Image (cartoon, rainbow, N blue to C red; front, side, top):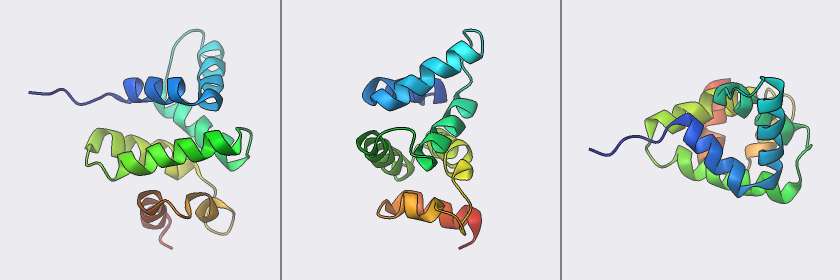
Length: 116
């Protein structure tokens, strides 16, 4: 039986695919004395996307991957994205819905979490 991909492996994949995300990974590992906590890291990634501290191309690449994974049916990764990324986007009266606009799975998850 195929083993599900872990949150840590998925975070590593994202970090190696997207330069701006890798910088957040490096900062996190340094901050946590060499340890890696994928849920805290993904929350930092969500905040960086919200604050536009990573470039627009990196944000778009990230959002495309996250949107695809949310629709993939891999429960472990879907939950990881929902809990650590979507829940850390700004609330509806801010810019959160604007960030996920055009990414149907992310937008649906955002609306489910925030009831909008």
